[in-house]
Image 1 (cartoon, one colour):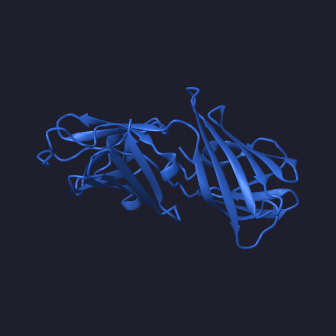
Image 2 (cartoon, one colour):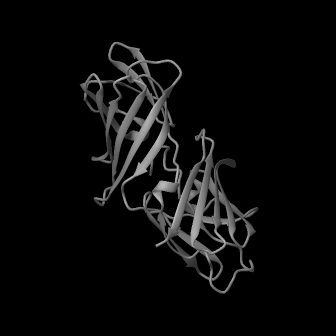
Image 3 (spheres, one colour):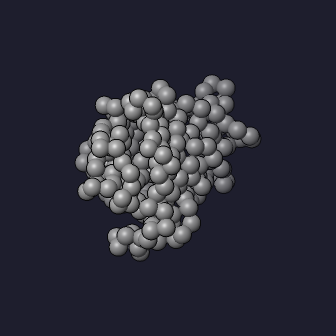
Length: 258
């Protein structure tokens, strides 16, 4: 998934039996992201710890490494490396499960206030997600250090999600980035599935009206992600608003029928 730890498009919606649905479910179909109308605000923090050692916060645990281009232990059992190619250019790489999963080129503007991040994420099956971020520094800092918040995010890769009917009373959303689906039960019945029970993960669903779905993801009973899916009146546009504890600003993803 994207930088914030895989927050978007994480759900498979499973509606309660007996829920009133139109004969043709309006959410079903393939949906293509309209990048020009979507926002996926990102934030990352870089702190100098001394010498050539830096602490990186990409939205999860802080990772402290030496910027020398070598592979060093990172979050989630990954290997993180950062190399300084020039005073205004860093190369950031992450290896996961034995393969290169992220390769990003960071380039500072001449005034040092803007950072361009050419972010590429690689899956084990060979597919690539390409996003170009532009960040602006907020607060103090110099060089690459500081609190960086994105002002634009340009998705270069085709991004399509498919919604299918699940048996007679649900929907399945296939996430093209995380390569997984997940069952979401009606609110009050969101007990963890057997496969998720060890992690204490569960999801609940509310049907606000025939054009609006609300999904809440929880870990150990605590809400972590809320997704609101809203269909336009002509059923041709789907807007997903994602709010999460780890996000200072919500994602707003706009899709058109593919």
